[in-house]
Each structure stands twice: as structure tokens, then as C-alpha cells.
Length: 258
Image (cartoon, rainbow, N blue to C red):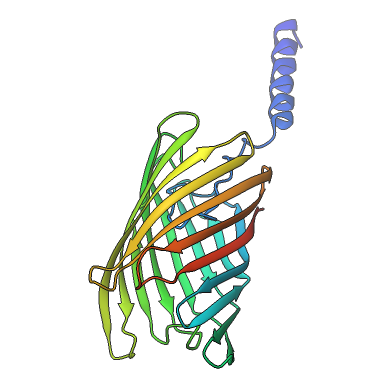
């Protein structure tokens, strides 16, 4: 065997060794759906999963208090631009403040996904679609008692390295309170994400849901701490801005990517 052939074999061996040592491509930065009220257009890498859970979510209305435990969103990356989502509330407790009675129920099951139409990692200008259908597996007052559907079109834009503008218009085909039909409910969430450092993000938001005098309007503020590349802890609160909106909501949770 000649010297030229030996050199070619050696070069091929080095290439194979280099590829085996390189390992898989780096994953995208983890962008959790929590804790903001709005949505983002970023999706998980194919084959990656995430579990995002509200450890506790308390909301106070004029005549009741509602606490959700382990309200959880499961996310699975399917392709470079598409992920599947399943959300469920296993335990919810509603307390009637007039007589102190409590009702414990499970919540409904939501099945949907997210389609990134531009920049699936959420960088720069990013936008997409997020359809979902809710199935009435829960019971009143935690569940709605009927099916519903919604479509959100999240848009985010990096103003600079510190500020991120967020807008989530949505429309829902929601169940009537009496269970006799459905009606269309428009809404939108406008937010500003502020990077306070490499690991801390603050999000300020304003949201309205509905097109009548009974439309809900609220302001919210939340903070997220990225403990590691795959683990995020969060806490936040929202205040109702009119009589149709629950007066106060306080929540905290954890997001973990696998």
C-alpha cells in the first residue's frame, strides 16, 4: 500500500473520530411558557420535552377564592417548528366566602400545539400560531362543563439585548355560563420583558378578554429565575382593573426541560 493511500486512510480516520467527539448540536435556549399571561412563538427542539407547573395559583373574586394546585402544561418538540401541548389542572379548590363552604374538583383537559412561523428559537422578530381545544373532563366550578377552542397568534420582538416586546392576540369559542351554547371571545395581551441579568427576567403585562361591558382587564407583573439551562422558577401576580375581573391573582411555579 502506497504512502498516498495511507495518508488518505489516516485522514478519514481523523474525520470519523472528530465527528464522534463533536456530539449533538447545542439545544436552543429554554423559553418557558410560564409565568407570563401571554404566549411566545418559540418551540422546543425536536425530541425535547418540558413540564411547566403552577405549584399554587390563587385568585380572589368578590364572593369567592379559587386555588389551583399543579396546574400543568406538558410540551413536546415534534419538528424544528412545531410542538405539541397538553394542559390539565388535577386539583382545584373553590371557597364561597359568604358561607365558607369549599368545593374540590379537577379541571378540564386542553390539547393543542404551537407552530413557529419565524425564528422558532424566539430571537429577533418571532411569531407563530397556537391552536387548542379544551375537553370537559373536569367539573364546575373548576371545569367549564363544555368544550371550547381557541387560537392565539403570539408575536415577540427584541428591542435590544434587555427589552423584549410581546403581543398575543387571541380569539376563543367559549362555552356559555349556562351550558346552552358557545360564543366568540376576543382578547389580547401586551407585555414587555426586561432582562435584569443573565438569570433574572421581569415581565410587565396588560390583558383584556372579551368585547362587551363584561370584558376582563388586568395588569400583571412576574419574575422568572433561570436556575440552570433547563430549570426555571417563577412567581407573579395580577390585579383586576374593573368590576368584571377577579380582583387579585398570585401564582408561582417551576418549569423543567428534559
